[in-house]
Image (tube, rainbow, N blue to C red; front, side, top):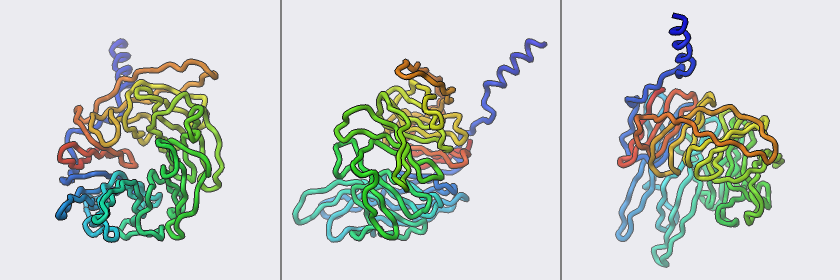
Length: 366
């Protein structure tokens, strides 16, 4: 009897406290969704692919919609009406970044512009800023688009952001530019320095970034950047960096890929404490309680299955010590369903996925 009780207690200790109901979607958006994002207040902004024909060209200009927490949907931006001078203009929405107060959306576009008379084409990333009613915000005197801009990092004032630009840097490296919605471009940030990526700490004017010398001399360095004062503090020198920089919801941990196989997790409050996991390169999201990481096991905009794995204890290692690489047992979600994109609600109660093929958006409850 005592042995049976001991076995039952052991099983209860390792079973998850909350089961996941991932068999049936609670909401389905039957559209060809190209990107989406949860707002801090729980709403979802999403883009729908729209194609238009001219005499010679097929153009794409996505519509943008918002779905309220109750399920009501409203189109806030009609792509067909968004043009640039007399040039042929096409774009696809790649991602959304909400302001902290859930009122303004920085929309990452991949744009193509062509002069029908002179020929030739220009491809460039760009940011489009909309409020949540769909009103265009024009921080640049040159028009509604902020060209050669990507990966925006919002300030707490909901009016200022810093973005990455590769316009004048070697391929794979970026400089930082500051932009205010009311007054426009505010100049360079951390001038003369180049970075491979950056991720904002929620609720702050601080970001974690991977800095690299302009010609990739020396190792990558993990930096804490105060975006307002432009002060910085080095956290650690990394052995390598292959992308995927992601700060945990509380801002206490950061994860990034060292290569195509190994993920490193580091404690930002005690940077000598780390863990390395062999999980394969992919797209990461933290669970709301920071006990798990979710991973789509391929790079962005490609399809693969979705798994989760528990974050191990982080341990301190002396300088130049060999850090062991553990191989966690992944939990396969959605019965191994292949997905193209996914996101978690801020409260951790829902997971939304875009399916390949028709690219419908489906939302499941935990």
